[in-house]
Image (cartoon, rainbow, N blue to C red; front, side, top):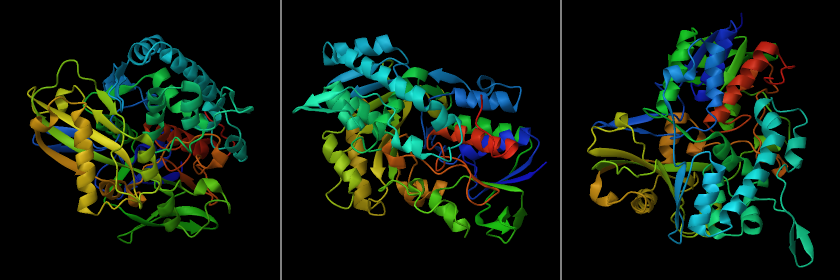
Length: 503
């Protein structure tokens, strides 16, 4: 039985902790704040409750597997999973609206044809077929296995089978989502639909690799799910599973250093002077903070995966308490597209330049009595991807984005301004306080191609006994990916370097 010290109580960390405890190890988790879940948190006020992190779940099979492997109670016995239908309603810049059914290719094709014109649905359906091919090519090496030592294979090969595009006697293939939209989808609204899936993870569709097509495919193929009571309930369930497996949690325990002995990680030093000895250390922290915790080099010199995308993405969120009940036909999720997508992306790439512009906004309206005082009220979460390099300490910047999100929310929620009782602002500053991630940055999922810029550092490090878990390590950000990283780290510790993922 080995002693395992885990830094942070995020979803990836807890997923690893539960699996390691079941394998017979003694696991202790040291969390800087006073609660678990990382970015998966809840805000409560006046009988209203809100998810302040992710509001929906894709690939629930990741957490089903976690519960199967760590106990007798399956996931559905401890949380209620609800498939969201429609998966989303989209409001495009020209005013066109379309509601897309959940996990139904035929339904999506028909809805797009009706809203955007004959042929639009078929073009999107054909794109999903190609996206599936990219998924099939990358699923195992990118998500289910530790990052290969020759990870350059994933970095150099584009798995998306783009359609040849002839122009001016030249044949070209799409290498980015923006080019897929322009050359293959051939409709500004379809292009915006694709780009919104990419932008939701903080990626620029003009520079992300075409393999980002797997992001809308994952949602289409495996559905979009809500956890009754809010996604925070999923974090609670994973935390309680850890407790059942005798994982120890120490809250308010800030780690200030990783101890080394005989060339390997051997424990932690806490801010109060306490030393926690361990045979293995698992860190669920961002890349920059992990570097601060040890003087040992963690990656090879020149490893592009160790350098985060710049500027890194963050999220700006409003929590809205509304009077009046939710109308029966309301969609759980509405995406209100930016008036000018190109200007939005320009500002994300260079936030120090022009004034902020109205971004693409996601509006979440869960039909959940647990989140509101009674049926005569409604809790709504409105959010947008922003650059963490904007001036978030400036009241003017916060006020501008508040106005942007309220105006976009008005297009999704009838009578929003008249119904608004109060709102709470959640800027990247709050994210940094809660997660410890520098500037409130939010990690994106790992993607193949793009010269490795969209991969994440491996779960192993150059310091023996030190492992990385969670969104800032392979296979990247997002609830499913965090759960996958926990499985990979547990496998590496239990089975050793020869571990190649679950079969």
